[in-house]
Image (tube, rainbow, N blue to C red; front, top):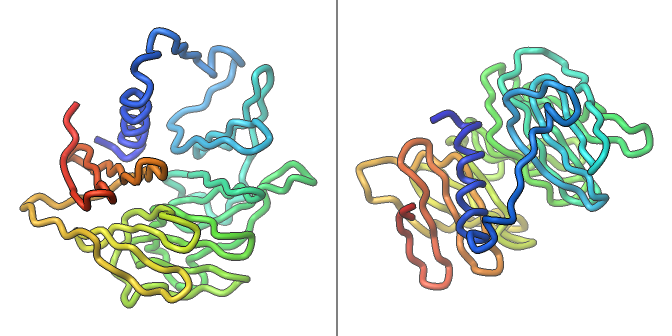
Length: 245
């Protein structure tokens, strides 16, 4: 299963399991049919505090309201793009490509401006960005095939002790983030950069994490994998188990 479809399936399963009692009230709409546009192979969706829904694809960023839409083009430095994803934390909305080009939405000029290209400070063309987390307007955390990086005020630094691939990261709280590396789940303090392994997969099958979703109220981490299904880590009981649907 491809990453783009896995992300969609994981999101649908989580929503379905939470709101199944109200399934009869759910209505689905085809955005392309509604507005006469053609958005294909979308990689991510997010909403902001202004009520806009944003979705990303290689062909542009789509912004939706109840009765209107707008498509934004990204000022790519190079066009060798596989996917474009979005991340939002007030007031920042970022769009980033798999090869490390990062853009920030400019609310004044209503456009996406080029912010930085991670390939340049790393001096490589083989970078693959898995996801980006926003701490504040000056600090971003980047998980990639070359490790976990901290980008702060224009400076890039390796956050962990090596450049082993970080397949996914998500906020645990305001000071700690969770990430997957070497078939293990880790918890890192972003102030001290101290990392603690909270779970090591003993199965013969690798985790191959593709998507995290952390349920703060329930203290449960949902884990979507490449081909081995969906798992869940419960911080209340410190247990890890497969979720059957």
